[in-house]
Image (cartoon, rainbow, N blue to C red; front, side, top):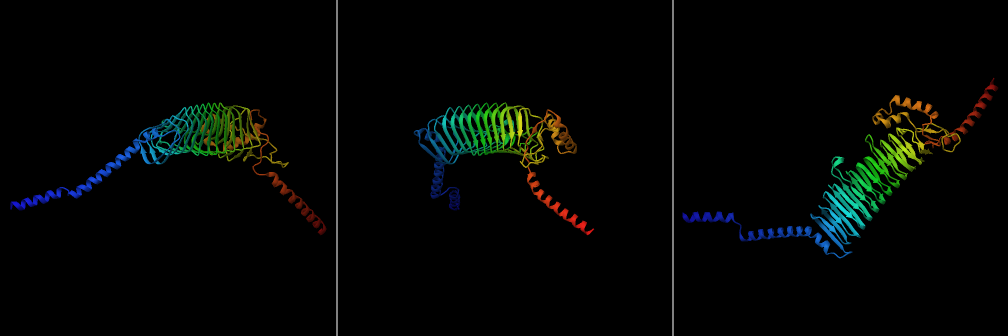
Length: 434
């Protein structure tokens, strides 16, 4: 009986413990797991050591790694990455650095100061409060930069790309959304922003105390102001689509206390105000398309500026008030009711751009909600009758016709002559019958 009890107890104990072969398999798997984790951690923690071990001009290839440490580049090198995530800031303190293909997931992305000849290519920033921060640097290229900010109030957001006291900066093919200002430029020169898509924030492009700024071939939407230019000069805004700035004070373009700006061949669509000028001089606005805005152009304290050869369609108001210092010339207005009797494609009567109701909207923006009412339409009709005798009126003396009335008249003259001949024949035949 005792022997049977011992056998049963032995069998239970053997079931509780693994066999030697099972133990061997378990320890082998455990060892491999430790080696894998150790190698992965070592790869992430040793990236800075790999960088420091490079000679100037050498290249570092990184693949499939998550880097949890902050990195500092102190020598001219090239970093090419594939499926690499950095969770801490990357600081560039050396000239002649190129970085490709890194994905940033920290609060800050790339910081560079007092450097030259830096190229960042195909970098993305997710959950980042700030993407690229450039200070006192020259000849910087940012190409294929993508950033999605953290959804929050504007007061808590930061800029996507910041450029301070720097020059010769190229930002090409950037996709930035959910920031305070997508691109903020201050005290800088020769900054070019090309082929970019900017959306959602306070300002799409914000230039302060800067010169030689170009924004070209970009799509900018859903800001308070699409492009804000302040205390700057030598500005070129060309071939951009700036749309959907729909807040009460929303503007596509605002030029404030600035001079020598060219606004050319842009499409400004569905904004509360398309172009706003304040304390601005020598502003040339040429060949733009202004479509479905509440106010096409407004201004205050404007000097030596020209609004010429633009096309305005389906805007509620051309301008809110008279703008001294602004010349309107040869623009096409879809609400122009004049004729072209001499066939030169220019209206024979001036276009009245000033609107009494527009002046009220400028003083009290909430009045814009009455646009389109019968009372406002009556007021607009009275404007056309009374404002021509006023000195405080903005006119386009040579408006272009949206539909070519002269061509229509050319076709009507032959029909008119033929009709007269037929009428003469009918009268002659009728007399003979009598």
